[in-house]
Length: 201
Image (cartoon, rainbow, N blue to C red; front, side, top):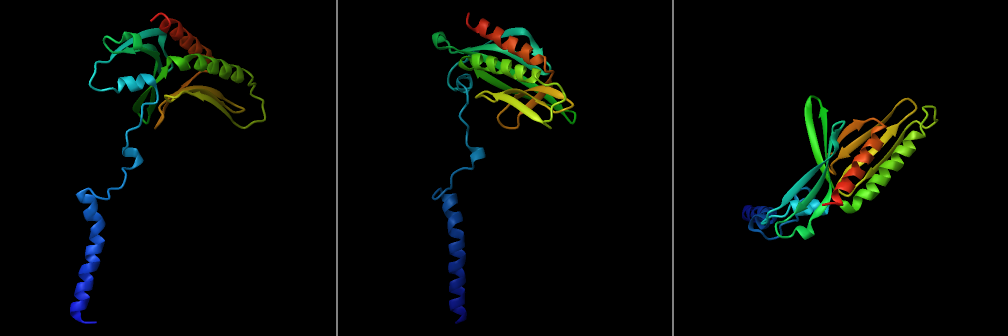
C-alpha cells in the first residue's frame, strides 16, 4: 500500500471518529439527558401547586400541638391562588432535621389531605405493633414503616435489646430523626389535630 493511500485512510478514520461528536455539537443525534438531569414531577398536589410559575401562590400554615417533636416540625398547611380559593389544597408539612458529623441537614415533606386519614391509621397500627415487643423475642431485627407519596416515612426498628422509632423526610437522600416509641401516638395525635384544623379551612 502506497504512502498516499495510507494517508487517505487515516484521514477517513479520523473523520469517522469525529462524526458522532460533530452531530452532538450541531444538535443532531443528541442522546436523551441522563435521568438525574430530568425534572421530576412533584409527587403531591400541594408540591405541584407550589412549583407552579407565572402565578401567585399563597401558603397558610397553622400550628399543630406544640409543632415540634424530637427534631421534626409539623404544621397544617393550606395552599391557594388569589381568586381561586375554592380550589385550595390542604395538607400537612413535616420538616425533619438531623446532624451528621457536626453538619445539620433538613428536608421537608408534604402530605395531601386525602392521605392524612390513612397516615393516622398507619401510625396507630405501628404503635400497636411496637407495643407487643418485650425484649425477649427470638427475631434479631424487625423494621416497620409507612411512607406517603411525598416521601414522609414514620416507623420503628427493634432488636432484642433496643427499640427506636423515627420520622424521615425525602425521596432522595432522606433525612431521619429518631423519636421515642411513645412519640408515635403523640405524632398520630398531631396528625389528627391537623385534620380537624384543616376541615375548618
